Length: 132
Image (cartoon, rainbow, N blue to C red; front, side, top):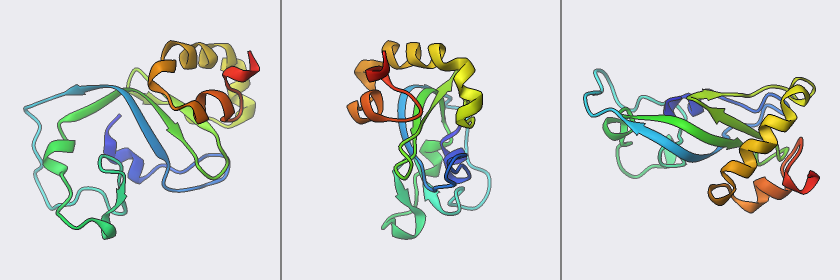
């Protein structure tokens, strides 16, 4: 997943934007460069965690374009839901579909518990480690 995807994503449950991104693993690709106008994101730079309009300097698109997010957690501050990014793919499904993957997602939280904030691990929806 690229950081700039966060400029497009909203919570599938409450439609909140922007979402919070907690990167666990990322890959660097030195050969990538920006060919075009900057900034690449229109509203929100998740690489810096800031709205484009609020940034004092030009966004770091030339650095951001080189990174690919392999593992992360996406969190919605409004409804408190979390969504995993697994093998570069964000799994942003509504609760009723996620129920089938509950054990896999709880295992994900346990595996990366040292890299995920406590408010996600223990209080986030639709389930968390305090449900175990």
